[in-house]
Each structure stands twice: as C-alpha cells, then as structure tokens.
Amino acid sequence: MSNTSDHAPARQPNDLESYWLPFTPNRAFKRTPRLIASAKDMHYFTPDGRAVLDGAAGLWCTNAGHNRDPIVAAIQRQAKTLDYAPAFQFSHSQAFELASRVAALAPGDLNRVFFCNSGSEAVDTALKIALAYHHVRGEGARTRLIGRERGYHGVGFGGISVGGIVNNRKFFGSLLTGVDHLPATYSREHQAFTKGEPAWGGHLADDLERIVALHDASTIAAVIVEPMAGSTGVLPAPKGYLEKLRAICDRHGILLIYDEVITGFGRLGHAFAAERYGVTPDMITFAKGITSGSVPMGGVIVRQGLYDAFMRGPEHVIELFHGYTYSAHPLACAAGLATLDVYRDENLFGRAKALEAAFADAAMTLRALPGVLDIRTVGLAAGIDLASRPGAFGKRASEVMERCFNDEGVMVRVAGETLALSPPLIASEAQIGEIFDKMARAIKAVQK
Image (cartoon, rainbow, N blue to C red; front, top):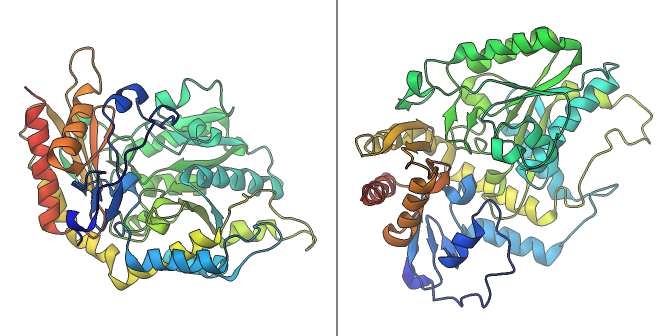
C-alpha cells in the first residue's frame, strides 16, 4: 500500500468560483474546500500530501481500490490503440467481451447487456426497455412505473420520478406521470441496530397488491427497487421482501427491476445482490463498481425473454430506439475488463463476504456514543443515524464528515443526518477498525 511519501504536493486551483459542485453546499465548500490531489489503494491524498483513508469507496464505486496498476495499464493501452468507436451501427471487440463477462456474473437467464455511462442513464434505460417491451408485445397500456419511498435511482427524469427522495423531486415539476410508490422498508422502531437484513418489514411488499388494485395490473409496466437503498442511509431489504415482490410481479405480468448501481460488484459479498437473496429480477442496472470508478460506465442486464421480444421484426430495422454516443466507450470497456480481472484474481467478492461480520461488529462499537440513534449494516456498508440539533437538520452529520476529513484523515459520506460507510473491498480488518475508531472520535468531538 502506498503512503504519503509517494505523493508530492500538488498545485492548488487558482479559482474556486467557476465550478458548480453537484450535491454540495457550494458556498460552505468554497469557504473550506476539501480537495483531493491523488489516490492509491485505500487512500486519497490531499494537495499537501496528507493521507486520507477512504471509508466510502469514493461514491460507492472504487470497489477494487484506487489507481490499481492493472486497471491503469489497461486504460493507458486502450487510449493508445482506440480512443473512440461509434456506438451506433458500429462497435469494437471489447464491448462484446465485457458484455459476455458481465452476463456470466449475473444470475439465471440475465444474459443481454446494454451499456451506458452512469447509474442514472442505466435506470432511465431500464425504464424505457420496460415500456418498450410491453409495447412490442401488444400491451402498450402498461405505462405505469412503480418505485419506492426513500429510493434513489439517479437524477434523470425517469430516475427521480420513480425515486423517493423529496429534495430530488420537489424542484423539478410533475416529472413522469403515472408513477406510484411502495412504502419505505425502514422503521427505526422495529429495526434499530440491525446487522444484515431486518426480520421486520417483509410484509411491506404486499402493498404492491394495493397499487395493482388501485390502477389495475394492465396499466403497470415495472417495479424498480434497490436490494439495499444506499444513498438514503443503507436500508437493506427485509427478510422475505424481495421474494414477495417477485411473486406479486409474476402474478400480474409486471417486470421487476433491481437497481444494483451500488450493490453490484461485491458490495454485499456477491457479484450482484440478486445472488445473495436468491431472487432473480427481469433487469439489473449497474454502474460504479464495473470499472471501480476509474472510467464512467453503466448498463442494464436483461433477461433472455425480454431481449427476444424485440427481435421479431425485419432484420434491417432498429429494434430499440435508444442509446448514447459513449455507450461501451473503448476506455470504459478496457477498464471494465481489467476491473473484473482484479475482482476475480483477488477474490474480492468472497473477501467482502468474509469481512462482513467483522465490519458489522466494528460499526456497532459506535452504538453507545452520544447522539447515535441507529446503526444498520449489510455486506461492507453501514449507515449511522445521528440526532439532529434543533433547527439544524444535517448540521451534526456534516460536521462529523468535515472533522473526519480534516482532523482524522478518513473520508465518510453524509446524507442528511446519516453517515454512510462503504470502504473498498480491499480493506483490511485493521483499516476497518481504524475507520470506525476515527469516526468515533469525530462523533464525540461534535457533541461539545
């Protein structure tokens, strides 16, 4: 593992004003910026060379760690060989190779892969495939999409429509029409301080029957859920929940989509959470971990039967009018292939599974700290809810995040009053302990 000695100080930017940061309070950030200059393995490095232990895998994405040599070398080789190939009417060999590798990791007959560039694009792609699938089958009245409260499905208009995060929705008008939502699966009263999937909450899937009765199954195209809602605080699916959703969808001819942008590629100890839960959806969206965050990429894995439904017209006619200029970009494909090699060669999915119990135990050491209301863990992910200060929702968690970065040398995620941890899958038990020890000091410090 590299240390600060390998990372020389970097130049500070001459102007912070032009860049409008996403999902960031810009004025506060620009008063006290948290800048990153380089990264290696488990650490980021600041412009002055200070090491920061990555407790968040960047944004849930650097599952193989940072700047891994095989991935870097693959990207460099590809950049020298083929910088870009058109994605429409042409392609390149790495796109087909990566698609076959991804399909081989997916469960059941999920074996057709449509590439895009992000989780948001993956979700919108899956929703469009669902609508088009019913259309080509002569059931064009199935246009309604069902999401879930407290769900996060990216920032496209489709994703925020089926998503259930208030601030992602309220500024942007009516969004897609004909969308409904299942209830959130989290209840602190019934699930507080749970390791793994909570025992309470499986019955909440039955609400889909209420939605079917309200709208009629003939109008509903698809249901989309995260097996673990990561961005809203690490909310694992309750025991039996996904099984019930699958059964109801089958009963009414509704497609089931798993948003595995966060849970894909090892976060829950398997290539996909669908394997962990033994419940196969009709589509899986992925992104983030496919390239360990090194090059933007996303995609949708589709069951054979859905793909076949489109392949019935004249062979010279486009079957699905959808795609992106940078679908299966050569650099992203090279990064993806190298990343899958690292996952396989280092058994990182198995490593995450083996570390899960120790990770959960380390997370629960924060339970007795003042202001900690709940802790949830599943796989290598943890959500810690903090008590809010009167009239200042989110301020305490933000202060913990800032103190972790500036004083403790560890990066954590914050969403509202929840701290989220999801370290790279290469983390050692000692580094996991270090992450939670540093968090504990930061949480104690902000109580003063």
